[in-house]
Amino acid sequence: MTDSATTDTALIEAARCSKAWPFQEAQRLAKRFPQGKPGGEPVLFETGYGPSGLPHIGTFQEVLRTTLVRRAYEALTGGAPTRLVAFSDDMDGLRKVPDNVPQAEMLASHLGKPLSRIPDPFGKFESFAHHNNAMLREFLDRFGFDYEFVSASDRYNSGAFDDALRNVLRHYGAIMDVMLPTLRAERAATYSPVLPVSPASGAVLQVPIQVIDAEAGMIRFEDDGQTIEHCIFGGQAKLQWKVDWAMRWVALGVDYEMCGKDLTDSLTQSGKIARILGGHRPEGLIYELFLDEKGEKISKSKGNGLTIEEWLRYGSEESLGFYLFREPKSAKQLHVGIIPRAVDEYWQFRARIPEQPLDQQLGNPVWHLLRANGAGQGEGAPGAGDTLPVTYGLLLNLVGVLGPHATHEQVWSYLGNYIHDADPAHHPELNNLIEPALAYNRDFVLPTLNRRAPSANEAAALRELDAQLATLDEDTSAEDIQTRVYEIGKDEAFGFDNLRDWFKALYEVLLGSSQGPRMGSFFALYGIANSRKLIEEALSR
Image 1: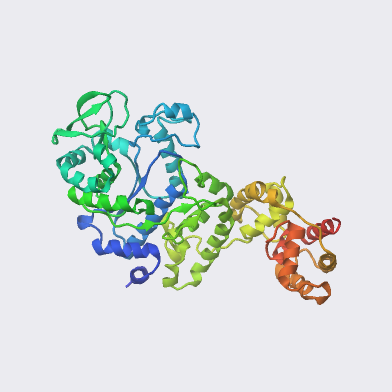
Image 2: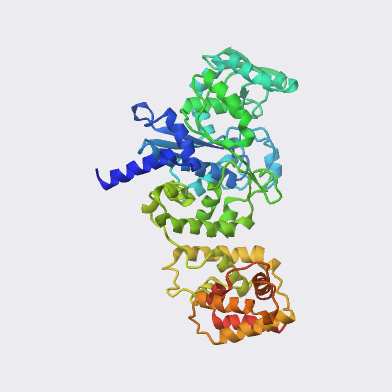
């Protein structure tokens, strides 16, 4: 047996026992398709997107998490073929105008029309849906996902869904039997699985229909007082949400799709309808929803969540993936304050991979993320084991001290105090974090900084620290500096009850915040001479 075959066998065995959630999902899917689909047909993974508002991280996370399950399934089965479809429901009618887009009056004049038939308020694309679809695809492409984009409008308009629509009309009564018991009396009175597009207004109509001829796709309905008979094929109708979801599963042959907790009821009803249509409900994870910093559900229309662009302004792509990996069944807050920690934790977990046995690697979020875009697998993946020479948290502290006008070049100049080969070409990952650090500091740190004057005993300790630093060379290690800092804090002459009070004083007096880095690392990064100037400024307050 070759080394590669041995590795593959070991991976499969470890995957079968792994408790990591992507492998738990893959194990359930493998019960249905142990070696892939019959005849070598790819197992189909799907994610859905409703382009009624600008894409946010909640949209992106479905593609990432589904990709993680996809890669886990491939590992578990030894490489069974798979596909991932990102499906946009852009035939849906616009129900309300989002709060965070321009030209609200123009959009309001098109309420009820399919999103793909409404002008782009940004003036860049063929329609509002095309704009939002493009934003999603741009980020998915940037992250390197392997996916196929499918538009509901393209499928409906081209007639690709006509056979599926005919199937819905054939089983109209059975579908109504599933849906009507779940609806309030008022809603049940006007409910229809099929939503015709008005030939007069172009709006998607929520009206009862009669099936005239299922095979021909002919229906009858009332539209603004007129009795209309027309064919639903070729984009002249769309299906109600739960029916549409089920139809899509059957028409496309979807085998796996996850969804948020808010769609649990939809999943149940759509599963019943899929069976009526001759298919089945896919396997899938029900995940908890993200909350904003106030603990409220994130909404595309409210715009109260983070956009993809906002995360990348203050953090990295890898840190975004890392945060989205963790605990999908637990509700988590999603706001800019969690970005710095996510950046540093990503690199901590990345550094551990080569030291971990295979079963622990499979539980490491970064092992999965390195596989997500085809970079490799586990220990052999490019970059596994890499570290940053400076943590993002420490970088933020440096930028904070440099002030509001700090530049990219100035930051690298100071990094030379801490890194022997301080060159962007040698540390591209660190270089990519400098602009986010400058932006985060400018927008969120500087407005809150408040460097207070030291108390008498704190001032005495700072003078001693200055004297100690004066005896050190510029290239003194961070650990040696940290030892000096510790000794001063433990010296009873300065009256600190514990080391925590000493470090808190350093943070508040020198950095202007209640929390901070290892001060030995910070002084080494900032430079001995510059650190002494910082102390001098503090003592002069």
